[in-house]
Length: 117
Image 1: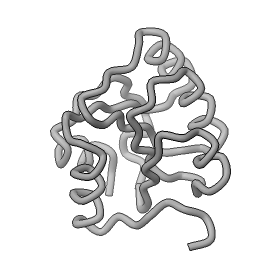
Image 2: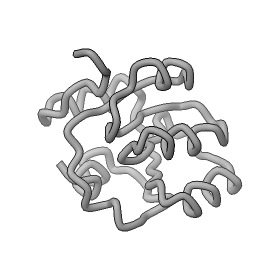
Image 3: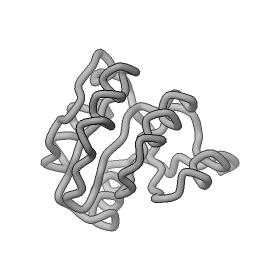
Image 4: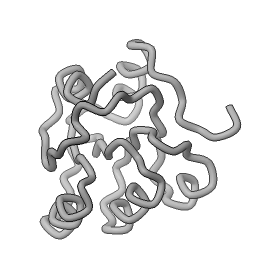
């Protein structure tokens, strides 16, 4: 599934768009802990989070993540958006809760983006 399709499914606002919007996404990792992402997130996954920290962009870049979706109507700061734009990390924001977002994406066939599964 492409990020553009996910954006429509989640009725998400595109905060940072780039060439990666057509990248094929097969897995999703949902976490508000950067340490958990560092320990267990698979490369290329889409990261769902409510955490508003600039380190999110660095982590997404380090793991070559497909993008970040901020859930629960959370909006990142201008600094986070600028950094994501600079690094080419797509950023979306949805009003759906983490639970709802996971349910929608799992229902459409996306798998957990956790290493070792």
